[in-house]
Amino acid sequence: MQFLTPLLLLCSTPLLLAQQYAGDTISATLPTIDNAEVAFFKIDDPSGKNDALTLINYYSHGTDGNRIVESKIQRAVIVLHGLLRDPWNYETDMLNALAMVQDTNINRDSVAVMAPFFPSGSDKGFAYPWTDGLKSGRGSTSNALVWSGSQWSAGANNQYPHDSRNTSSYYVLDELVHYFDNKTLFPNMKQIVLAGHSLGGQMLQRYAAVGDQLETESPVVLWVANGNSWAWLSDYRPLNVPDCPTYNDYREGFAQYVEYGMTYGANLVAQGIDAIKANFDSKQIAWARALQDFGDHASSCAPETTGQDRNERFFFFMKWFQPSCPDPSGTNCDTVDLVDAPHDNGQMFHSAAGLARLFTDNFYGDKSRAYDFGYPRKQQGDDPFPDPSLVNTAGATNYNTYAGGLTYQGCWTDQAPTTAQALSTLLYDNATNTIETCTSGCVNAGYKVAGMSDATKCWCGNEVSSASAILTVDMQCKSACPGNTAQICGGLRRLSLFSAGSPSFV
Ligand SMILES: *[C@@H]1O[C@H](CO)[C@@H](O)[C@H](O)[C@H]1NC(C)=O
Ligand SMILES: *[C@@H]1O[C@H](CO)[C@@H](O)[C@H](O)[C@H]1NC(C)=O
Ligand SMILES: *[C@@H]1O[C@H](CO)[C@@H](O)[C@H](O)[C@H]1NC(C)=O
Image 1 (cartoon, rainbow, N blue to C red):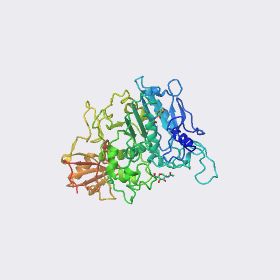
Image 2: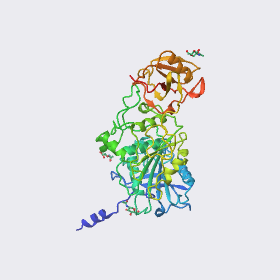
Image 3: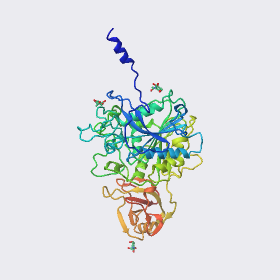
Image 4: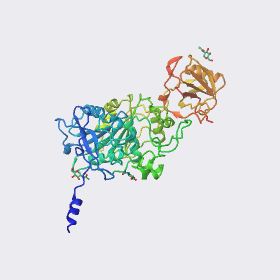
């Protein structure tokens, strides 16, 4: 009996739950911003070694300037920072977007906005205390969760604190979702939104693939915008890139997953790509695509196998893994919004599409959802929830007929010199190039197919090399013809293709 009492006491010690404001106060010099505070969220250590793991985050205040009243909150928007790890900017941009919503019920008293911080070694001393000269790994002296490099964006385990290094950034997202889904704390919660732009968008796309089935009471939507690369859900790749044996490794595929440092999701990944894809398909994704985003931050060859820039990578991912909306009022309806913006998270949040997905869709728990934004569409299959009042206008935009009855057949890749030329013969390469001179030149030379690339080049052939040419998005053909700048003459390694009917392929 003497032993029983302390044992019972031990067992009845309440579990320290994951929750906001319950983490350690991490002393730091982070920027202060309007209408939000730096808060400390306690994360339950999955390995049970450290009962004070702390996620630094920015957390919104109510309209009176005080902490939110949880019982009034109807929606949580968790916004992820990008490569630069600047959650203060994302919190500010998201709060500015919230202030733009027309419906006055949707404000800082009804919407909680959190920007979690996934700091790296570069943030030492600034985001969390650091002491130089200690043994390797011991310099971080607080319980702040810190990840190595940009590995937070793929779900890897934390690097610090040293005594507990099994906290995946995806486990952190799970804990945040569970927290906001707790109906005791948030009895009026209707919708949880995880939003990521750029590297934050990548983080969520991979989380969609390997993230646990959380079986929440409130629906969860992942708003995924403008990632530089996506994890492909097959080992196929549209583009040939020589000497790229790592093309299918995590983070662009799921090979070498454990080697990357993943424990989260390892059981699912071990089941194979079909299981991963089924998990991915069960998630609700609101895709947001900036139409002026032709940038590329690829640091390895792997993203290049999926498109030559962010615009084309988005296109090819949509083409091979088409989003769907089997039930618009359900929890697995994907949407795709086309936003006329560059690579800019603020412009994405503030767009009509951004405001709908981030704040108004299902705000009242009535399952309402805005139709896909942005017409004309850029490709077949990118309109899972089409606006019935607008025609699906995917397809060719040049309806003229040229010499020999040639008409526009779309924008195609030309992966030469990696593979054969898409078209056999370079007719000319000079500053007179127009659609008329190239098409008539090819027809007069006895060819059936004409293609313009890189503004000045005119290619002819009788068939197209299927090893080299893949239909891509019209936007990739963006070079004005030097002989008539109102016309488009392909792009870099991209052909504006003309033939009488569909060209034949070899
Ligand atoms: C982390 O988790 C893995 C797998 O769950 C386990 O094998 C390993 O021992 C854990 N490491 C630590 C430091 O807890
Ligand atoms: C939900 O929140 C309440 C209030 O903070 C807490 O007592 C309860 O343990 C939480 N439930 C879970 C499952 O975390
Ligand atoms: C461009 O090429 C066409 C076709 O070969 C030729 O007729 C024309 O003279 C060339 N123009 C220039 C400026 O080289």
